[in-house]
Length: 217
Image (cartoon, rainbow, N blue to C red; front, top):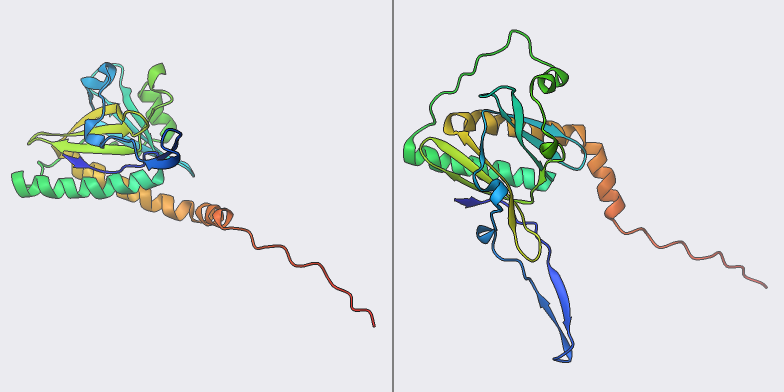
């Protein structure tokens, strides 16, 4: 099991009893995250779709085994968490390969014409309880010989909790990883100007020039 990222909040508190201040980091380690009953079973998915915007990525995990086809889980992560997720999934896949060998080949039938984003969502229903997705700023990855699982976690005070649990076949992982890499590279190109503007806004503004002076003889 591999911890991916941890963007929890640090908390600074004042202690009135001791006459001073204490700074503490109250967040438990992500491996102790609470698993709510509604996500404990997890969902097994057969496909993935990644959408991006300037501030976040949306990963839709698709379930095409039943009718109607539907989005079984929707996870929202920041670009930083996405980068860490990609690196950790790459590492986990390498560990899987060292232990079990390469995952079996995965060759889904290819459509004659690549569907548009609208056509995909016309075929995959998005349930009301999935529409807004589940936010995560940390991820745990684990695998067996046949499956990989992802625990997407919110590391918030006072208790980290699993917001979504997703399982996919080991055969899908190399393809999923390559899609994540490609989407992240496209994101970096598409939003390069936006990111530069954000960095400029975060830089402190220069002090105003001093007022002009007049010398009188």
